[in-house]
Image 1 (cartoon, one colour):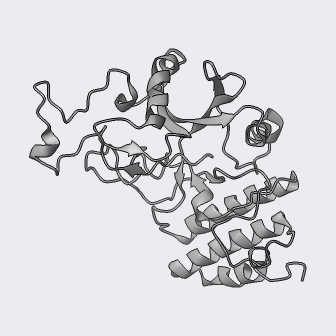
Image 2 (spheres, rainbow, N blue to C red):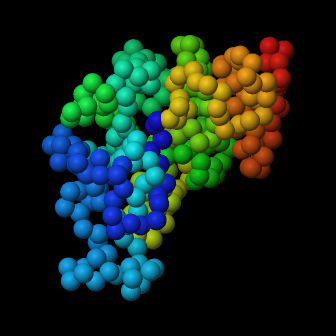
Image 3 (cartoon, rainbow, N blue to C red):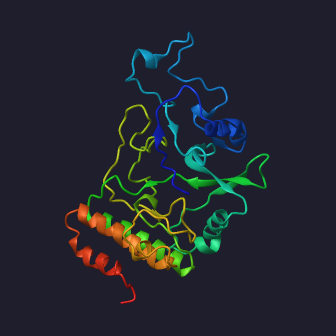
Length: 296
């Protein structure tokens, strides 16, 4: 789940049913120490509508407002500010008793987190959902973004990103956990060092959704990468982004999900080798790990 980089939909004067769920729980979440964006407050009035009823968007369609966009993933996740320290977090709705929740909590246990190879997304806490205590729960996660873009600026950054991803996948496999879709859209990073001014959760290419572009600096500082995604940390049905693996092409024949992970990571790695100059020495390694029979 864990992907909190929330793409946005066109601005709306009204809120969708999934947004109204968050509006309903905004006072409760604030009481728990988590503040949602203004759009999700019960008394929200679109900032482009003046007190006299004037709609500024109708007068100038190029005007931008922080609260004009609604995220497409609000049925599952929304960003918030942790009031005690001002840190951005993601609140994800997860079914109680689900394999997903059990795996998330297991991978975030003190014993599992003590292993430096554990690059799975850490659970920061949980909050029960009023009236749904036996059905669903808010899981508090760090705010992450897709690991690319911004672009890599040197070979060290390129190698370190994939080292962490490979290390994380290896850790999961060692603990008998298959990712199932270890591909680009499920590789995340802690962007604290890369995007020091942060990014808006409804538009990850903007700082504030007011037209100010993303301020990204060379990725020369240590950046944590996470081989994680909404379908991660469990063995799943054969449904993934990369469709050239032997496992995918031979479906519905039973397959080894661990081999599939290896193929997908290397295919992703190879696609980036094609994108960047100066990393050709990695290609043979990728090709070898994409062999039809990985045991050879």
